[in-house]
Length: 299
Image (cartoon, rainbow, N blue to C red; front, side, top):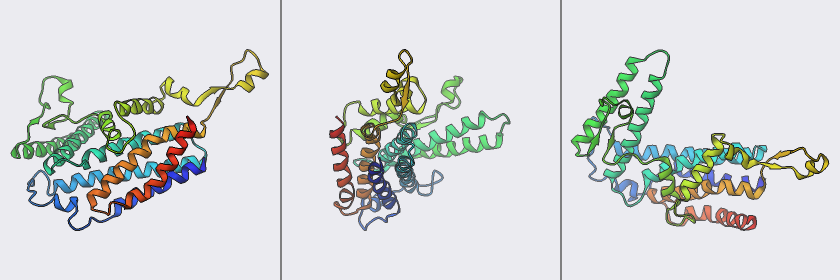
């Protein structure tokens, strides 16, 4: 199992390195600021905040990769690993969503704003669920959403804001610019369908549902790591004995979505920073080759 941890660690540290790296002159990151004028009371630098949020998500993914490696070395190689994979995959999907190639700066800011509005609305729900009301804090959250909505309309985004609806369910939905925020499952689907990935179709949906079944302690998820102990059954006929654990091939299987996602978002971050094309593939190629060998051996 230690060899699997050793493959994860350079991948996580590589993402951390990209997070700390500076952009090269003429990079996509630098060019995206040219003639960008979506500023005012919305945000001083909304595009910077979009890239910053992508960076925070990248750091989240890196931490979960390194954390998964630490769990493996500590012998905690079943449920905790799956929980880490699921969380790291979610943040990788948001990184991919925010840093996607082929979109202009306006669309990047729109995506950031929708994520921010979603976060503000969730914070409002948390406050409203407290035993002691916090009216001042609730007012502040509404004012922050109001500023985004006002500026978005000034910049000719189509805004849907149902916070004044008589329908309680509609009032609890966050405002959004143009299209509604895609679900986490949809973002993971897009990430795992990215060019260069070996997955396709609805593999992201299947992967996320499977990981969630384990993370949420659903019976079909919990069963993944329990098996009938045939040796014990032979000694005590009529008594069903279960053993708990995970094999090396199973561990590789559960970790594969996070490994593929990390490789993809690392490549995207590297490209945005304007780093040489060979640098990130040089880090990940040996890991992917080893991973492919493990996957083939486990079939």
